Length: 195
Image (tube, rainbow, N blue to C red; front, side, top):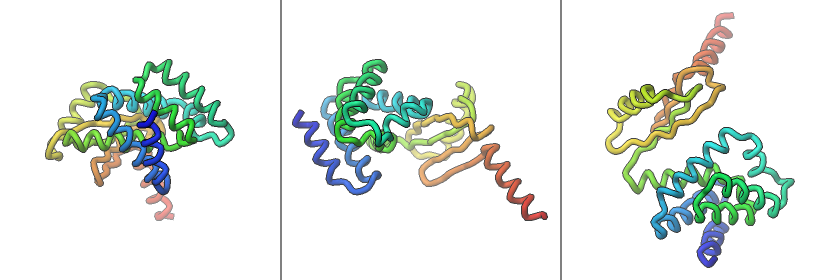
């Protein structure tokens, strides 16, 4: 439990949601690295990210100011048990619930995975599509992106049905928006200019 107190102390020194998330992510990363559990924790966090994307109830749970610490803790513990998350991830989620910090979980996940990619010399491309990519599509996209990256490439694939079609690719500070939603928005703006 001394390590948990250390995480809490480091995180409490942070300012703002981004700083808070970064400190928690860094502390979790150091614990996972020390325990040689970077890959299991990363897998847990990726699974949690998918759950957060797919479940409006889970998003409400982590952001709810109405639920008290005990209720959030119980709910997140049940989720961790059911998802068979590692002990470190399970304990970490419990700490976030006790400290009323579950609302920064998405930012913590992103920061942890960024630390892991940096450690491994990987560049992460965030690919958002309207529907899940087939293995062939994912392979072709990965191959095309590798040509523009000097180093290893990791793809963080997400699904957002509101895009209607196409993709949005973020690679570092670059973004390519080839979604049907954006094209329709641009067409709508152009049509307003014609009137």
